[in-house]
Image (cartoon, helix red, strand yellow):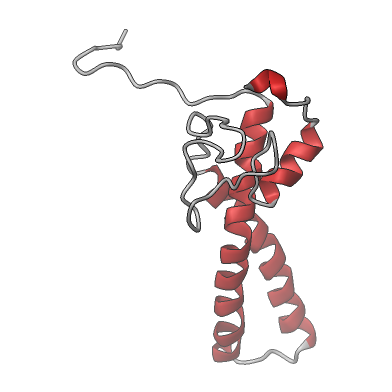
Length: 134
């Protein structure tokens, strides 16, 4: 099936992942739910399960949200005549949560597309009872 598809350049694949689409065909959805990755692309049949994003999207999302929110907090504190702490909490906590919920699936899709472009698959688990220690 892979031979039927034209090669996809790096940035196109990342853009497709950002949009939550299959990095190979862009026709199928990456997710069956909010963050639940499909095992295969429903359109082209690409096996998506080997490309596991694990915790990377959460780390990148925290990094991005922190770099957006913290400067805004500091600007408000500096030029907003030092508003009370309850105002900061009422403003920045909901904004941080909303921003994280918006970015998380997009970053996860981008990470999956990045893994696909570099053909980085999750290692297969060792059979039960097999000791791999040195």
